[in-house]
Length: 429
Image 1 (cartoon, one colour):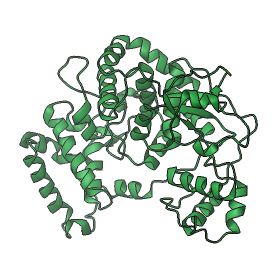
Image 2: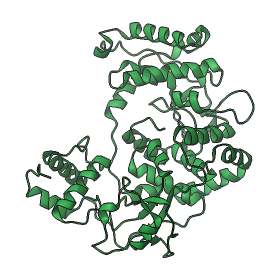
Image 3: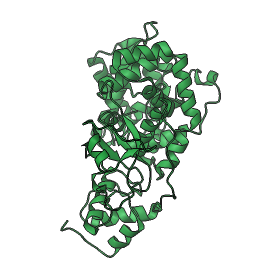
Image 4: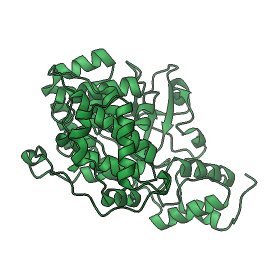
């Protein structure tokens, strides 16, 4: 869910499209407590403490935060170090993908149809969630489908083992110490038993993949059994996801989130305005020649929107409204968040996305990485030079397109790369 890195979430989402649990019965099996791995090297960020000493201190912190000895005793067999989890966290990698390919797989018709089916099956819970939180059923269903295929792919690893291993590692130690304590509070509250807490390798739980802190803060009991069970109860999943989107992500009741549009093909269109950081009234976008995807005119109103071009000016185009910020907060990967918003629109009845008239050229991985290196040399911060086009890289690309008089649509092209290869430095931008 939201507090994973975008790279990790994108990878998990891609894997979730192809993995299935062996059976629903196996998903409910109690996992055997893991045997401790060989003692890890003392972590520098914990002043050289051994894992056992670190764990004793963490248990004291949990007790000070109100966790009972009963919950600590129940969790104890699962609070063991697993170097394999740490290795996965350090080695996570995402393959660069083009938006239409990713969305074509992740927002496939079967997922749209299953989302609509879930809305019919759980109509009462969805209606209640929309009334209480203002979040449309399609928005909830889209995240439900993308995160776990509606509960089919929640992960198979003991959550406490993952959390405490990542807490001992130095990369995100404080975050995962807090998440471990939150997981213990879930046990203490009676929502889940320690043995039930099985999920992704990064410690996420349930059908919309909440990390424990979000579980504690936003999970609600919608089926009335006195527990907040996001692994087994569809009503609890629906209500809790709506609560998080509305309360945590500040969803705006009654407002749109993402609509496909068509932008003019003219080279003199102000492509530099096509950015999530730029909002114009819909009337202004209409004045500039933007229409709905089917050619209908946009409303002549002042509702602010951004023009989003996930693949540049020759690819799909969307108007992203204030509520789209909930998607980028859930996951700041532009490909994932746009796919989630698009899938929600499809579940809500929107037509399929228009395909580009001609294939959109995409630089290969090595050339995107080379371009990032050139951008760094030119004085830009692109984040990690990894061959993946994140928001920082897109902003730097736009700045260089403006410099060279190219359409500034933030999409890297062979022409831009060729120009930059001939310009070792551009520090005077």
